[in-house]
Image (cartoon, rainbow, N blue to C red):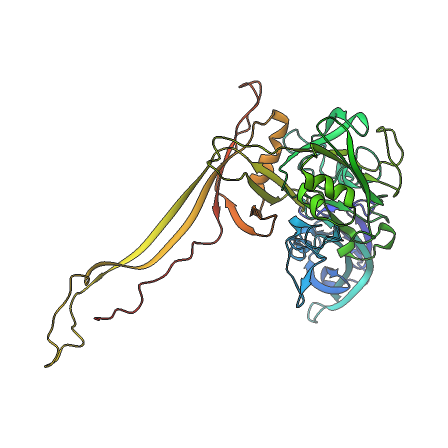
Length: 496
């Protein structure tokens, strides 16, 4: 048997893009002797355990064609809990407040399903006659490894379905080129990828990604942490510099992967460690106890913005984008403690969602918010009177509170319409990401302590463009709460 085509094992792939194997066999092609009832076998092993077996007949050219991404997808999930905090064997804290849950750990590993390095083993079955059952010859070709993250592939980088592709497997390296942190220009696993050259205080004029965040805002940055192939990250620390409104440096610190939570790249050995998270939000910086300088600056409310970048060492203080210690683009978090006449005393609403790369992104909706309660009632007609209890000592009778149309069941769902801040045309991609996300959450104002599942109810998304109308743009999005509102019933009817 021979593997004639495989997903390039030098690259990380998206688990929701088409991953194909093509297998050939000398036994299938043999005419002397001739074998019957031939089928190719593909076995999926996850963490060393056999999880699935698929058999296919040869195609017209004698090849076995397997699309394996469909097998992998059921064994993947997005990390929702901070892996640093447990109680009675249960992870009790949301990942969105990473660094504030356990103030000494600002990194954490994933849940073991956010990144998968799976093995495929190929075999065959056939019989020597038409009347006998085929014999299985498994594991003829073992050790075909594929590494995947939770992405549909090509969605927001390089060639896309919007702009057209030359051919399907023409760009298998798209994750490694853009999202493996090994040089300036590579990115964390976020859909905020429209980085452009601009002013930064740390690096001067450089490529950077600007994020608006509230003083109590939360943010996590996912990143590939595997140094060995097919990863190749060189990240050792994340450098954070905080500045005031006069551009004066207030504090800075190197958060070291492995020391301040998570697992150092050199020690990564399993799926749970191959993708990790960093708590980059303003609230995480104000609550972490790893560096008191940053903590005090954020708690004092003097931070106007802060800049975050990945480094391939633990001590450098880069001053330009040409610095060899950089292993990511710069992320500039700008504090916006905004108050609007449309907020009616309410705080801005923060939405977290699973992005197109299987990690988390965040968006504040700071303008008008409206809440609507949708109520559905199931009713019945009640007959008045004490029919079942009337006797010689209790006459038949009824009160005015009996009978008529009564409610037997009430279902109530809360819905809300949120309005963004003014956005440029380049900022709009992030809203499309929310619309397409399978998991969306409302984060409570109490520093991420409460996470409520919600569902996007908009069935379409219209992208505004400068050619059609002048930017900046306002967008509204509609959501409903995933849980119904708690309600009661009238209870058993009594005549007294």
